Length: 298
Image 1: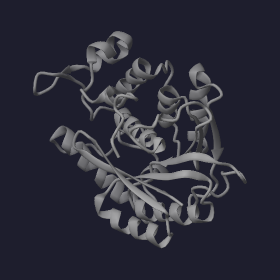
Image 2: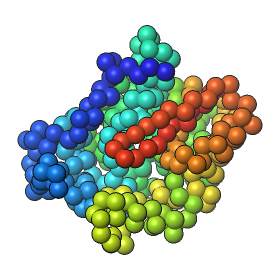
Image 3: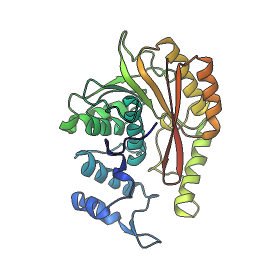
């Protein structure tokens, strides 16, 4: 499906970070900016304080968010990757290159696992005017996300939150009878165990620093529920698919990120068994990171 780069701000982060612009609007970022090995302005992406300051500057400059933070140990996500997911979703909802992207609060999105950072609703409200229902199993994450919405007037009335009581459910217990969404989005726990998550963190840090990494990487980090679950992302997505069969009309599109290409065949088999009427796999790439969105409908 052709991308409508002229109709949405897909290219906002494509050219890299304009640190002059960002530090002008967010002086707190300036102490973290220095020339990298290539002589270009950058930050140390292995420094959690630097990554948080960059996120705060991006959210202020590009999305009008003046108050944003995450609690200690919670996921501090990369903004460009989150934006790419929503821009790909916007293309998906339009249905074709010659059809306008649907905008406004009547376009209702279910964010499965909204997290304390609340980044998907922030971007979706700003760029498309959509409304969101964010769910999470973690009450602390939900409290913090609610505080973010209250602190930023642009989000008022556009984001609701619901506690998911079961870590084994995506929709059951949070979707109301007869409720309809244009789509659901999800960034599932990628890893199958705490040990696997820790090993993944170490690999990321070594890629950034070229040295032996410390035990913890807060900029990638996150609570256990954000990083891993039994069976990893394949098991999580399979449960999503199984639940979606029971409520096929709830979402116009069911979508989720899938981190590892090796997992795609298992997910596609599950969708074939579920008799999904249509399945799309949308590639995503930010820098060296390759990922994909899996989308299906009945």
